[in-house]
Image (tube, each protein chain N blue to C red):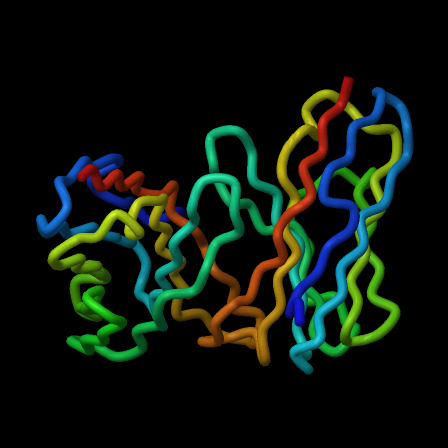
Length: 113
Length: 113
């Protein structure tokens, strides 16, 4: 049973396109996150939702829009993709947003041509 | 403010020990440690909450000096499976509910036979 699953695993697309990444967790957690990890391995928090409410909204271009239809799902939509968006995007979840371990999905490797 | 991890990289022979440090300029609520193997997702190792607390996980343990705002991860009798990038994540002591992890840049650990 996969605890945090992301789809797709790989995404290769052209500049200017719009794409979505989906994330689902079956751990019963109430908090979910989106991270971006660039080629230098830096893990940058983008967004976090707790019980479907946006609680962390970092300085991210407004081309990125998260959506949490319920506690178990957190999707990320990206408009007008740019070369700099190429990275690995990780979804994670935790029970609560403080002092709790985060469980990561396998990541979505986004490559912009 | 991003925590500083040291060293940036370390190479060990199987069976050797290593220490990875994580220092913050801010007062901390907790320190988290994760390991990420190449091409995989970060995996939670442990959380340290109180000053001087030490925790263990297999042959990996950690300490947290609250006063110095520092944590150290100890890897003893290293195994090949310990290879990867180790990240610390710090939760600063701030008012309000929206604590978030601030991640270090990682320490790359390679264990050779």
